[in-house]
Image 1 (cartoon, rainbow, N blue to C red):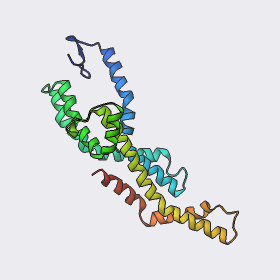
Image 2: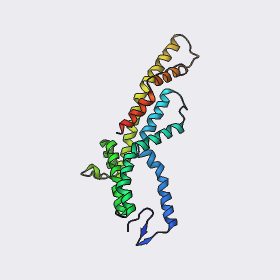
Image 3: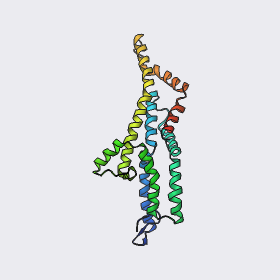
Image 4: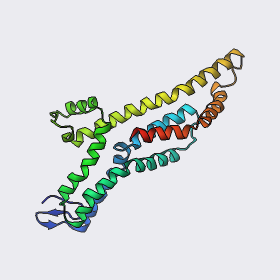
Length: 221
């Protein structure tokens, strides 16, 4: 029979509890990689990193704060998908109305829809060629081993695009500060030290956190 989580069977016999625990722990080791790469967490953390670099604040906000913000935003964005998986796959599996194989298949449907929504066709095609896989007739039939790396590539490109746009206004301030310091002969004063307060002031005045986070969340709507 097909193996099932916490009810694993092999040739009609239930696997021992230690073996089930080993399998469960093995799956849990993959969870951080899944959260980091196959959720909105990837795009959010890239954009927040670029934003901090553009502001020139170095370690403020700290990595822990940015990662925490990214994680909670990811949970917010993924809530409809996780709710769909729980209602349509996990609950029927708990009640015994769905087999483990069917529950897994049902639970992957909303995940595939999410990945397909943000994975570029060009990246999917590259992964199909790399894996020597024939393109399926329907997008829903794309294998996860092709869809996941395609989604990661697409999110990397999107995150870098947003980061580049965020950099532009702060880069202009840096250029103006550098020009002013050179024109008045203040070569001892680093331009970054002069521009930093103005960049932070600009970001605060336009309510930058609201704009950036709001735009990121809406980009996944």
